[in-house]
Length: 263
Ligand SMILES: [Zn+2]
Image (cartoon, rainbow, N blue to C red; front, side, top):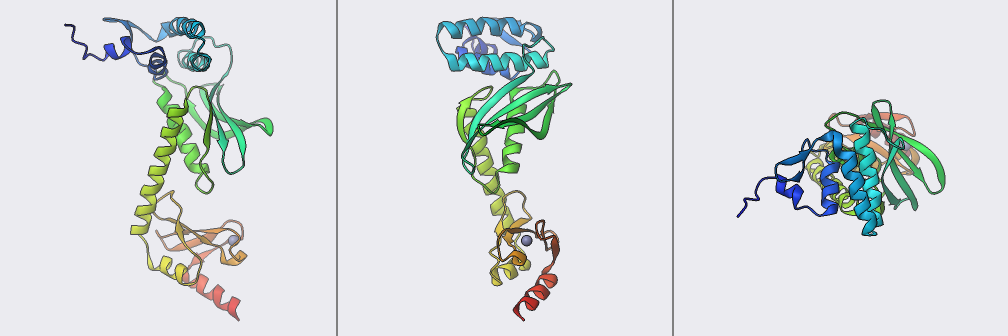
């Protein structure tokens, strides 16, 4: 019996799709046989062979993924790539009902996140990027996307999966689950750290709710606009602020304002 506990067997025994995923995580050694591995400089040829295999199998989704992984590794390993971007995936935004494609575009030593949507073909710069280096992996792309979704989907619904690129449906929903879990954790923690200022906001019917982004952040109805939008509340120093109305203060400021409104 051959002992197959060594991690090289995970590579050797993997299915074609699993091999692509292993390569996308940019391992130092990619095993192609017992004790035989390909270093980073020969991955393009290996992926080219895998692409031919996927074409023969008529698995066109996998073909798409292989092309993205090949370009991604081409950026990392400084090989000539046929284009300067990779498609991460395509989502459907539940709030706006549009399809959004996520890209990483190579600009110098950075991979910058861009989006386009089906109503506007222009590239939108998301102001977030990854630095290209030897150790960059698909996991870094996943983390980048998770942080971006977390930042921009706190108030609306989370996106739905549409079409795969470098990342597939399973990886996408793992991101969504992780965001939901993180949000739940913050909600719980925020409620534990509730202060009398929050009780006051409840008493005056401004309906404070944890915003799920950090353990001190709450949202409440904005009294200056009759609740048309939210004020941000922090239990760190028991203050509030409204970016729309350009108002900020503490409980006393709010009490004074509400008094004048009742007069
Ligand atoms: Zn306001």
